[in-house]
Length: 165
Image 1 (cartoon, rainbow, N blue to C red):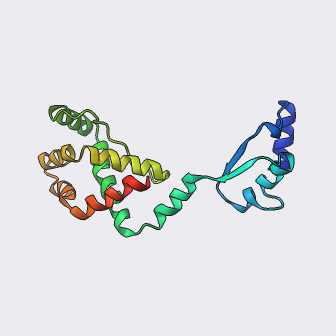
Image 2: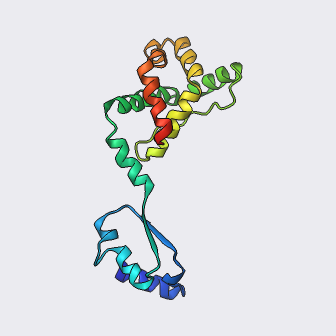
């Protein structure tokens, strides 16, 4: 990649690696290898460059090792939000309920497994409106969803995510 892509692009645009301060990578050997890794090749052009490991990749690795309890919390939150988001009428009803309960933030975020930070933000948002969600699920006869917010273990596990996301 480096030998074909970089010299051509950088020379045609009159760029220099001397102007690059840092590189953030995922830690793959093709990126950080000591001989043919992208970072080592760039360091030959600019020895002062700073190389760092992307924190998003670290968080993703952490999320995979946190255990089943936190995974269950994310899975439950996903089911709750996806239930509301799956039909156009549900978000409108939920929005009206939030307005009646004087809640300022009323948009729920869809869960995504691709980004750890997206999962954390979605969970945070769900817990910001947990009273409204619980009332919504009680009124729509989804008692199993409403009971999720009464589960102290789920609340404790969700609380942990506020510190790691």
